[in-house]
Amino acid sequence: MKKNVSLLLLGTLFFLASVLTSDASYRVFFLDSYHEDYEWSQKVLQGIKEGLTGTQTDLNVFYMDTKQHPDEAHKNVMGQKARAAIDKYKPDLLITSSDDAQHYVGRHYAGKNMPLVFCSVLANPKNYGYPASNVTGLLLRTYHKESLKLLGKHLPSVKRVVSVGDDSPTNLGGLSWMRKDLAQAGGDIRVKVIKYQQVGTFAEWKKTVAHYQDKTDALLFGMYHTLRDDSGNTADPEKVMRWTVSNSSLPEVGLTEWVMRHGGLMGVVVSGYQHGYQAGKMATEILTKKKRPSDIPLRAPEKGKIVVNSARFRNLGIPIPRTLTRGVKIYRK
Image 1 (tube, rainbow, N blue to C red):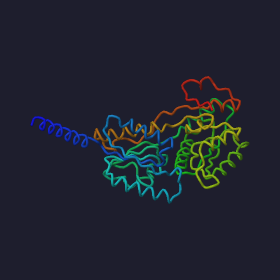
Image 2 (image 1 turned 180 degrees about the vertical axis):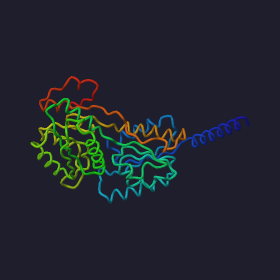
Image 3 (image 1 turned 60 degrees about the vertical axis):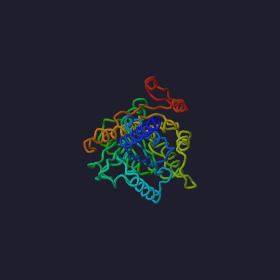
Image 4 (image 1 turned 120 degrees about the horizontal axis):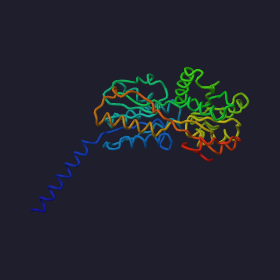
């Protein structure tokens, strides 16, 4: 009899613990514009998980895969699937990353009851109906001024730069912001961007890089991840940049870390991890402290990091300044 009572008590306690755990757990849906193997997406997700540390959450992740499939038909289908998955899951909070997730999904929830935290958004947030009563988040603002100043400081002969990138909405949104910001900077930055080029294919990219070899002092790169190869497939981003540094005599300034990882010279870059981490912290404030999203201002992570490629310095015959050997991230091949 005592044994049966003990088992009954244990069972009751286990049931109560399960109920309490379930009640205390928040349902969070994370919608990523890209794919699971994409490095930026991995860093954002890592940051979100760490930003949610201490908050008991059930995290549901959905990838739209628009970087590998940038056609409109795919984006529309994945947007519909994502919205269906969100409505079925009924999350306590939605986190959306990068512009496609906002355009095809997030904007439909602006002004509704469910809290929404966005991150990695390059375009004007007003395009998506943000901010709204239930929306806050992080703007992705490249460190273009800092990167151009870094280039000018260590390569004084560089006066003109041409920006070359893919024609993705993400890149176009970033360039729109960068043009306005640099125009307002005026004479504060000695190195000037004299041309902005967006291309859709790797073949066009090759022609563009070759065309500007004697028309500018350096090339600026951000996104080149949706370029199509001759078969219509997405070109391998690393192969794109490796080809570039092998066929160009111009120094590169990168606005994203993978430019230097793939062989480019230098840049001040944004961090996917920081975007995810701060989005996770915002979500924690909303879920556990019951803070209203509208009371959390939109912002951008304030500090970028300097990244250089020592092999590219050697290849261009440029000595690496001692100031770029300490406190910076160095790629060596």
